[in-house]
Amino acid sequence: MSPVLRQLTLTPGARILGLGSRQPERIVTNADISARGVDTTDEWIRARVGIEQRRFARADESVVDMAVDAGSKALADAGLAPSEIDAVLVATCTMPSFIPNAAGQTADRIGVHAAAAFDINAACAGFCYGLGTASDMIRAGSARHVLVIGAEKLSDWVDPMDRSTCIIFADGAGAAVVGPVEEGDRPGIGPIAAGSAGDLVDTIVISDRNSFIHQDGREVYRWAITKIAPVALRALELAGVAPADVDVLVPHQANLRIVEAIAKRIRAAGAPGDMVVADDIIHSGNTSSASIPLALDHMRAEGRVRSGDLALLVGFGAGLSYASQVVVLP
Amino acid sequence: MTNEEILKGIAEIVNEVAGVETSEITPEKSFVDELDIDSLSMVEIAVQVEDRFGVKVPDEVLANLKTVGDAVDYVAKTTIT
Image (tube, rainbow over all chains, first blue to last red; front, side):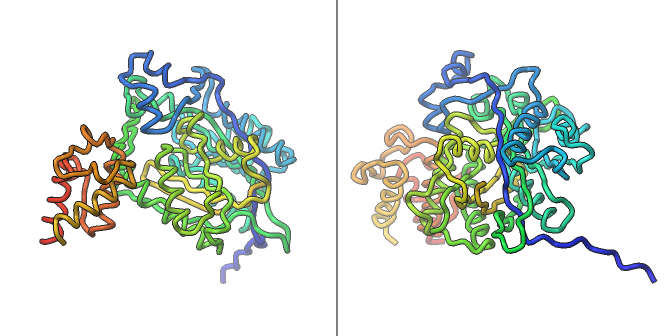
């Protein structure tokens, strides 16, 4: 008879212990884009997507460089040493090549040696998938502390003259350290509500390594304003949280009008009128998997959110893919 | 449902989405050129028309709805059949 495989001891729950972020120094304003010869204006961009400026990395500044900086800051914020991290997950869809992945080298450069390390490609939903995976790894006992990073260099994949995309996408990284809660403590990460709409795969595409990103803006907009709020409400239901208890809403920073449309629906479901809604896109652009942790870190630095606040996160994008969960802010 | 009722419903939706006075929203008015509604607001209007009247307004139909009257006729035609 074959032996029974032993299972690890389950942990009651996980929570976010620290946050960190990194933005490139170079600011690109709307005026910079029209000055480049793109047929657009500051007024048009603000009205359509709500962006005033975005950040672009230098040519020699990579996805991994930004991931390392954001991850190191999150570790310091959590008060943990690199040796205490068991796994590093990097959500990204803009690495210059498929191998090596970003996570292994990011872990090594942060000083986390021989950690479990892998990338997650769920585009703009990647950070929420990473957070859900980290929480489940910790709960299952396969890791104690997990570093989750969303890092993107979209400027490498955007046609600088395509006015439908070059005004939106940007570069940056955000990170969270996830760890266990002790017996009797309250978990700080709710169950994930996730899914995909593969029938709409053609609406956001980078065809191959020599192509730029293409987006069917109108169709994606329709999908985002109708299908994403219900996913976020499902995450609340899974976590046993009423909309009225949500302090902060952090949708992926795709377009300010999509953010506002989602917020309107969450409020219509009972969320408070004074719920804080992330609007980091105004100054950061759309940084795909980095946008949610970047927004969280910025809102904390600005004093708009506090430790212990209940935040509803919802990521959505190419795939099409989506994921949402409720978290307690560190 | 009469065309007047459909017009009233569409006017309320356009008012809510784009802030245009309902008295301005008459059948001959063009959404883009006269009411100054952009393409993303048109998508929001389409979504609300779908919810309110129980019709489908796919993007290819939406692109052909130039005037308020076009939208009223489409809803009237689609809800009858």
